[in-house]
Image (cartoon, rainbow, N blue to C red):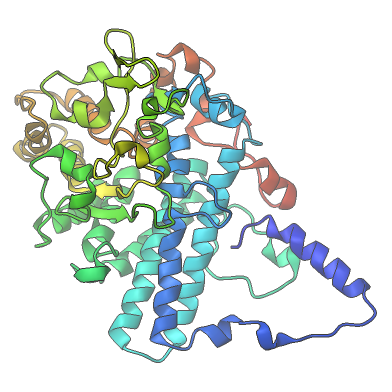
Amino acid sequence: MKNILSITLIIAFFSTLYSCKKLTEDPSSVIVSSQFYQTAADANAAVNAVYSTLNSDPAGDFPIYGRQLNLLVENGSDNQIYSPSNTNPDVRALGTATYVAANSRVQKIWQQHYYGINRANIAIDNIPTIQFDTAQRARLVRESKFIRALLYFNLVRLYGDVPLILHNPTSINVSNLLVGRTPASAVYAQIIADLQDATNLPKTYTGANKGRVTSGAAHALLAKVYVTQQNWPNALAQLNDVINGGYGYALFPNFRDAFQKATKNGVEHIFSVQFETNLGAVNSTQFLSEEFGSFNPGIWPIDIPADSSLYKLYSPADTRRAVTFYSSQYNPATGQTVYYKGSAAPYFNKFVDYSLNPLTTQAQSGINYPVIRYSEILLLYAEVQNEINGTPTPEAYNAINQVRSRANVPGLTPGLNQADFRDSVFLERRKEFIQEGQRWFDLVRRGGTYLVDALHKYPAKAAASSKNTLFPIPQVEIQLNPKLTQNPGY
């Protein structure tokens, strides 16, 4: 479904068109879909355009991955708040749980996801009509289905029931473009169907194709979908496929290598959104720390940890701490280095591109944004084993302790009960995935008052309530589409 705001443009266009007495058409300069989808090159271009919706925005705004999703999922969690220097009221509201249906960032992420879904729908519908290599044609369709599933998975977790659009609109009748909310169960069914088809993708790629969706990525995302639904047996089956399927996934020995340009698309990266330095797509996670903003006096991070307690979650020996945060800044205006200790919260560090020299030249970070890493598969496996068996099994301990061992922290000692082990898994997830768009989803899927209780630990988030387990349907979308209804409390 195209950006729904275009509905008003369509109305305006046809009002003007039919008010004219004469109409001269020159279609020779217009390319329609039936003209475009002719060759294998066209099909590849269409799928590359689907990928591009993850790392860029058609209006030049921040992309879904690297910025927009983090604004909701990290700012909306207990991980971070806005920087005091941030004057954008909508961003500040996300960090204080005071956002409303008119919030521009809540609206933007909705529109970006449906823009990507529309591109995927177009590719899925049109590529099968092109006559070229059958295997390549099937692969491109399945890659598009994976991305459509990923986008719907985000939407259904963020908003609950959402319109399920599976084909590009073919009618200019505005009323036909207005679609109501589809029950979440039906959206999940479509996500699962798309991912099951995507499990037939190749296991690996070489050369310029590295970074494309693989069958391992499809199994991994499908496992995450089943975990979200608490469908533990199916989740376990998918996790076993990832772990034992011969994909060669492993943890990097050094945690830092998960966030380095030189090691992108490595053994731990199951699926990442691709970025390259200064080549157009902006990995705007750089703005979460303003790329060592202290090198430029007066520029400070847009988003900062909720307080120093986040930094203090890590033991001094935990190698993830120095990768996740930087704890000092040099101010060239004063010639002084400020060290963050005690109550001062360090700034986020994961997506600083250290391959650049000088470091301050970072306009566009070339570090990929990891959507699924192998460490998450291990932690999901530990979680699922614990839930299925009612107690942590040796396999569960082994999985979580692989992640802890890589971080240079002692492994968990057998003897925990189910609840304590569950808490340990979620704490490990928090320390492992800060700034990777996971925390709010984790808090919500634990159910009950878990999200609200976590947010209320911070005075800045005192306004949080049960309504915050979903984001509001953007108000402008409801105004344009009366078939949409609002989530409770907004």
